[in-house]
Image (tube, rainbow, N blue to C red; front, side, top):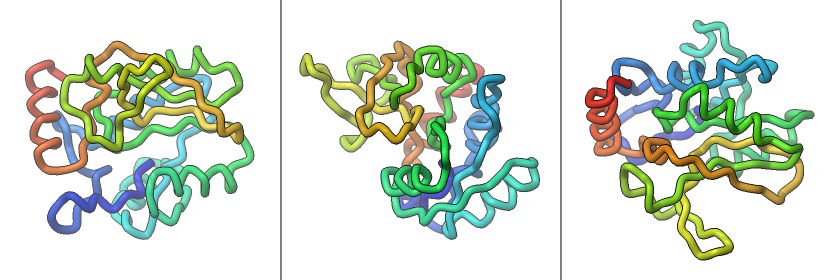
Length: 186
């Protein structure tokens, strides 16, 4: 998912091309998605991300266009366009790794599945729109890693890695993510 407009950044920023730890967010996402169980990688772009399209094409990745109206609207658009179950990874979560994607795929039982981290375990304070509450009343943070099916019921899988809640939404987030990457060699 790389079609957002990066509204909280100054200027003409395309999030997918920002770097964390010397690697673009697009490159980090592609690395995390290197899974034998996946049939390929599609980069969802929009009219707002022309340079991301160019970089993805240069890397030999397939492109799918969305209207770029927001995550949920783009997912609904992809559900209408794609004839199969698909995995999504938001390009702005830099610390999702191959093993996280593999664990999500292993847990998949045919129904929609969303990865979360308990908010009490996050490495950074999540944005309000990224927080939900489970049946027991415990807060969790959406990671941006999901398996999407036509079934609107979505189960969650809880990850214990606090770095998964790091999400690049503005300059402060980018600075913090680079600090984390530097400190931890990521």
